[in-house]
Amino acid sequence: MPADADSPHAGHRTRLRDRLLTGGGEAMPDYELLELVLFGANARGDVKPLAKKLLARFGSFAAVINAPQGQLESVEGVGPVAVATLKTIQAATRRLAREEARNAPVLAGWQAVLDYCRVAMAHEAVEQVRLLFLDRKNHLLGDDVVQRGTIDQTPLYPREVVKRALDVGASALILVHNHPTGDPTPSKADIDMTRALARASEGVGISLHDHLIIGRYGHSSFKALGLL
Image (cartoon, rainbow, N blue to C red):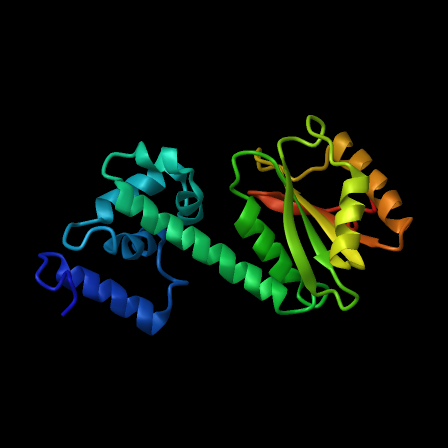
């Protein structure tokens, strides 16, 4: 018997679960998906008000699960179990996206790479720089977070990137970073650093396939923009 079977809200919970299992979650509004997640943190209570409170504070389901722990804890009614439940969903989502990106050639599965980068970085509160290392068949060999903080404040050293690429046997790489402002437009520092990295990597036979900037409202590709 489910733990919430004797709850006064058991019928509502059962209906939501049935809708998820029979129709999938795509058509469900954010607050209902969030309710389903929060069921695990509250076996008997009505979690709809808390789900709506979280959405009012953060704006979307994705923003809620990606919100920093401290901000989640500041919302009345959110305790350690709810935070752990939300962070479990965040970790699972990132792992699924990473596995999809790893299990297919990157250039054949470009959308999976973009999806993974958005899940991993779009909601980060600080700028994060990561490198995706690829073999000759464009499979991912590694995914390293190499820097936190803005590029113009904490320079990315091309020699260190090239050394790491050689260490893992990479033939190519993709540079990715996020703009916490949400706007993925490249800055002058982004452009200068990318060109320096392209020169350094090409000098040892490693191709810089692209530099992606991830924002909450989209992404920019240096290759698509003619900057690489």
